[in-house]
Image (cartoon, rainbow, N blue to C red; front, side, top):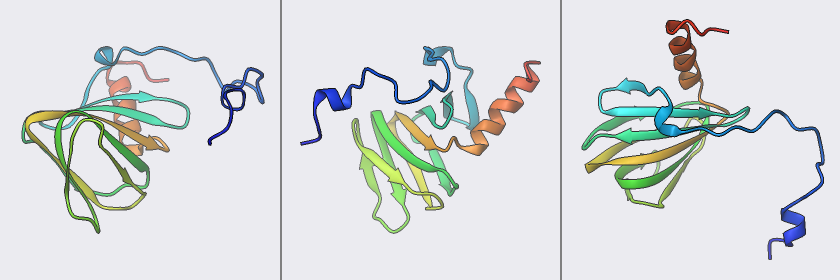
Length: 142
């Protein structure tokens, strides 16, 4: 089921590389803070944004919606997560929530805080705007 090793691990390119790969140290990313106690460290690809999120204990991300699809992956701690139309769930290490575009959701960290990964496709526009503003403030605008 799922194909062969040769089918999955292609060795010959089927197109032109879109750019160069790179390595990133998350702790070296300048954090973005949209709310006290909630820190974002975004890693931007060409068509996807992977956001490393740190919640201090008992901090909440308020109810909101956005056009981008979001996948939430809990790495450490606990996160109570609400998705419109569902009962809230307590997510723990390895748990995942999938939030389609324009679906309301919110989250609240437990008493020990939470570390999570958010994957946005396409990259979340508000994070891109914050990154541009931070670059301009540092005099790095392109």
